[in-house]
Length: 257
Image 1 (spheres, rainbow, N blue to C red):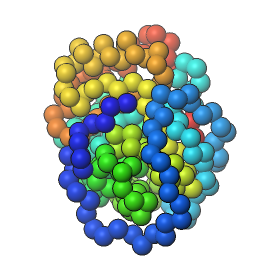
Image 2 (spheres, one colour; image 1 turned 90 degrees about the vertical axis):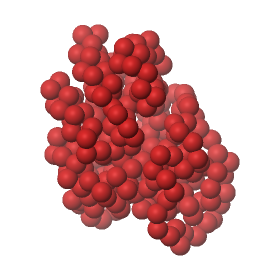
Image 3 (spheres, rainbow, N blue to C red; image 1 turned 120 degrees about the vertical axis):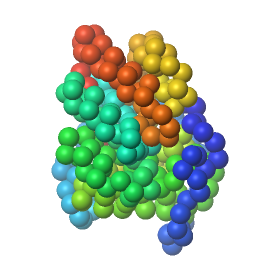
Image 4 (cartoon, rainbow, N blue to C red; image 1 turned 90 degrees about the horizontal axis):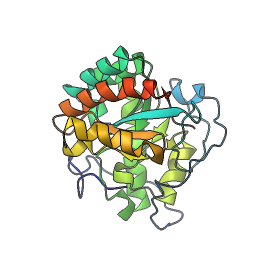
């Protein structure tokens, strides 16, 4: 799994001071994006989307499988919400009756709460994608990782009007054992991907579509972006990929929890 961008990512350095989190243990960085999906039973999902309160812990293994089963596909949309491109992505998903998982950056959610609410209103799920999209999170302290994850969780929950993220995706796949366990303890299943469409690099709509068609056998979770630049190729690729998936007998759903 390639890491998108470099250093602190295109959102810049983290804002605000780190939380005072007590560090109890250290762990080596790992990223097992191509590992087999963990299919542990999901707890009551309403606990993770209800306003206020805590949530039931979930498995800490990185999820890839779909709740739809063997012919299920998970559409995941990263780095937004973006005032230009998120509405276009929502329009395409609505056109084809597809639900997706939006992995939101905390500062973006804070800046565009109206879009977070639109995502929720359309029946999509939310995912914590850290405060500032720092792809070097796994090289930083546990206190820093906690601040990035927990602050983003609060930002997204507030922006949504009380709907909590159900997943956590580390920027660029920079998971650690600590970050996975922390997210899982908050009811956010660590979320990987199987097909990196490379849409972030704007290789052309044809190339994005071809990547999905060629690599879908790698697994069901597809990675797209709705922020970070011109995402017109992504929008057009989704417009072609979604009906193709249906023609091939796939059903779009949500990742396992």
